[in-house]
Amino acid sequence: EPEVTQTPSHQVTQMGQEVILRCVPISNHLYFYWYRQILGQKVEFLVSFYNNEISEKSEIFDDQFSVERPDGSNFTLKIRSTKLEDSAMYFCASSVEADTDTQYFGPGTRLTVL
Amino acid sequence: DAKTTQPPSMDCAEGRAANLPCNHSTISGNEYVYWYRQIHSQGPQYIIHGLKNNETNEMASLIITEDRKSSTLILPHATLRDTAVYYCIAYDIQGGSEKLVFGKGMKLTVNP
Image (cartoon, rainbow over all chains, first blue to last red; front, top):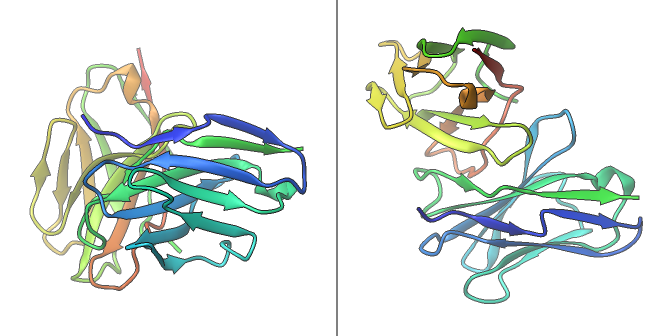
């Protein structure tokens, strides 16, 4: 069964460093999402992406964050200058379409900022 | 904020049916009821969704009341691996927003 994959499973970085989290969505899906979950808190929406553009973003998704689909299979989340509070699980999701279609999540990347 | 309310936790005996309630009294006609679960800190796993009619798949059944103000997720024969946090989410298919809004969910513990 097709699934969303994410790499790395765990990323440790120093505060102020740039990190790139990678996702491979399900192959025939067209909509891509990033969510995050700070330890012990709710899963929060960050951004949705379609047709090489951001279609929706939350207040969390500020100028330090960016997303990209660099090729036909990968979808990336970049954090330019990490802060301690960026430590969280980051989940990628994808769906065939927006609105009416189910979002399928990857296993997540645990980001630890020291 | 999430438009659904769930009890914070529930226990169930292994092999028995687990009935997970969800209240969504302010749900609109365009909002589907989606259920996901999260095992430990893994990614949310899709379970089932419905609009008006009851739904069943290989994982679970979803019973939605006629007035759509509440629903019940049924795991027919709970196993230890069903221990997880279960999220009931109202998702507006015509609201223009693509985001899923997760609440705190309900922790289901399946006991041997």
